[in-house]
Length: 495
Image (cartoon, rainbow, N blue to C red; front, side):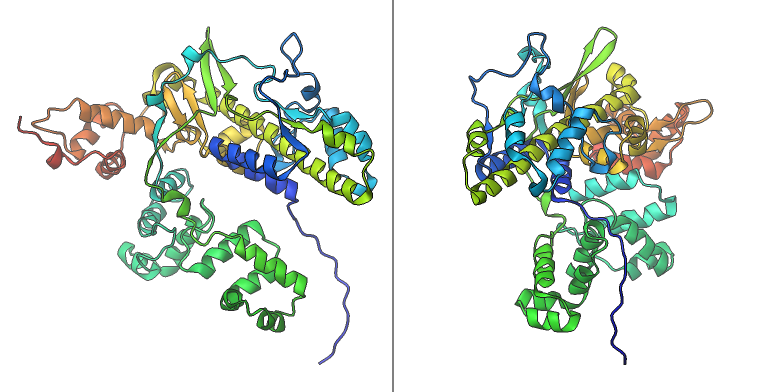
């Protein structure tokens, strides 16, 4: 055995803390964003909330003054925006520089009024146009519903979908595939175990990350593969030493893997931050009130998208700490510099989040114009990629934005992901329909049936076929069950 030193060059993609924060804010719901802002206000003294009576920095023509230098601030999150102004590049370059290269006193002087002000330069909402309290009542999706929605938009073949549906139905409330085995799934559907394993792997790529794992180790490995793809040491710790991590037997881990103390601590902390129960966030069985993140109003022949900024804190950089920058000691100045970086990045990330929600909503409005005019029967088939291509963003960005974000339209309040539907092929010259539009038609057919002689699923399929919608009886049954409608034998009424 020969011991020698080898010099090796390698490249690795890593996410900066700022990028991680931008992604995190992008996928937060409105309530979670408010909670995150309040947490930051408590932890960062450089960040302040503008007082209610304090004047907004808005010109007489309704546009922003200092905020214009950072209007729709850009970040590198998933390639969100392709165009950047010179001012934005300037700010980003300043913030990204190492502290030693920064003239922080000059930075503080120039950006003491740097702020996030909800609705600045926008149109004030008429209170009469806001939805009633009753309209904000919403039932939270279950984990099963969330996975089936993603399955409906997947590119899996019909036989794969059948297997996937069975697997999803055997995922418990914590998000684990434990109610059956992959061998049993394969046997039920007459496929090979390898085929079933491939389908399971596809489900394990769905949201929430770690879902459909068969045990804790597999769950954590899925999360490590997704969020820390290049971290081989983290993967080894999870594969070999979960028990030692739990017992805090760090010496055994170091001896086996040859990790430094610093590397071991980093891996342990990373594992501790992972979610052991991916289905946890779907377990709240309670009715929730939702506040729309965005409004869509019709003005003349056009639809206008307006972000809902009501109740959002107005953030600014503290002038007190700007002044403290001039006459503080080295340690204090380093502390203030770090807090300045954090505050500016938070404000920029919030701007980016709001700008992204607006762009995605505007794209949805363009695609779903007929729905806005005429109702859910006219919802067109739409996938994430179409919107992503339309606005020059990545599919994953669109996916994050459309989850837990709500829009108030002339047709009601909907989660943004409601507008994404799989395609049902029309017969002959009939245009393809969205699956949600077909569900609406089924609901209307059942609503108009004779209560003493309700329609069977086959009868409903025959009616749809006359309308040039060719779907099988079992598809009708699946859509009916998804809407919570009983079968014909249980819908029959004698009086």
